[in-house]
Amino acid sequence: MITDIHGHPVEETLKTEGYVIIDGLIPLDLFDKLKEACDRVVEKARQGEWKYRRLVGTQFPPWTEGTDVWGVQHLMHPELNEPVFADWYGSAKLQETVCQLLGTKPEELQLELFNLLINPQETDFDLTWHRDSVPAETPEEKEEEYLEIPHYGTQWNTALYEDGCLYVVPRSHRRVRTAEERHITIHDAKSHAMPNMMKVVLKPGQTVFYDNNILHRAAYECKSKRATLHGSMGTIEGGHHRAATIFQHGLDWMSSEQFQSSLPYSLEKPYANLLAMSKRAGLTKLEAAPIH
Ligand SMILES: O=C(O)CCC(=O)C(=O)O
Ligand SMILES: [Fe+2]
Image 1 (tube, rainbow, N blue to C red):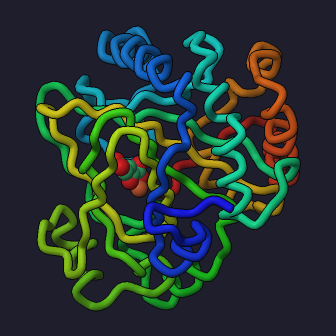
Image 2 (cartoon, rainbow, N blue to C red; image 1 turned 90 degrees about the horizontal axis):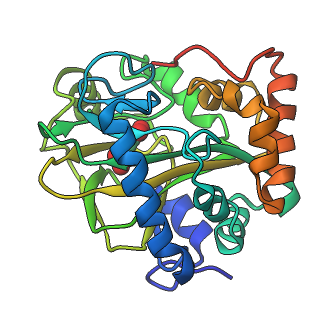
Image 3 (cartoon, protein in one colour; image 1 turned 60 degrees about the vertical axis):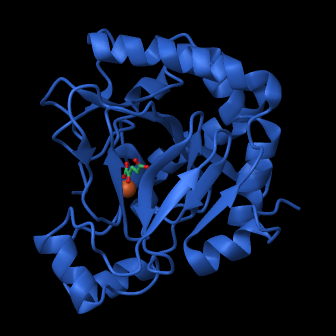
């Protein structure tokens, strides 16, 4: 059984708190290789050689404006030619953790997003308080409805260097916003005074899984090096809603033979499950419109 840093079963903490911190999901022999691969892809993204990147000034996809980079997208893209990313994304303990969190079996896992969050170079950059799949302006009744939709997936941040960028409001993931939270998310979205906010500090090698509907924001500082692996995996039960969340990131490059043949054995079934989700959603490409 996988437990969190306090010795509790991970799925229980995630369910009650909306986030859970776990040690040791990077095998020791991969740690340095991941750091080196990150340095290379960060350099390519900053040089503009890698065009799939998140740019300062824009929070949600698509990222078309700006030059300073805060994230590198699509780490498993065959053109990046860094197989260590898929090796880790498909590694045994990570898969076991995701299975335990989702209450599912390895053959039912779905391959999804794998990106990198980094420090910008020119200016600090704050993301606004948000829930990933509920826009701030959503009226209360709709918000309640959206929060009931099961995710059929989970997402995580794994820090390669100490990371104190993420702030969350514990236990906010399944209830509608209070009047004050609602006001902040709409009118003062970069507030540093959100009631009950908590800074999530990860030591190198620690992972936080968080419900993507927990109220959260991030503060990106150009002075402290950040290279935090940011991934998600789902289960075969994900429906149209999951498809919209995942495919808004533009994953059509994953339909290539080259990508398929680059995957380790442990990701073959999760990959087939991703393709099956896009078919069920009636998509002809692994792409969908932005949610925000
Ligand atoms: O930078 C982070 O840790 C969080 C990023 C985030 O909230 C997002 O990409 O939606
Ligand atoms: Fe987010």
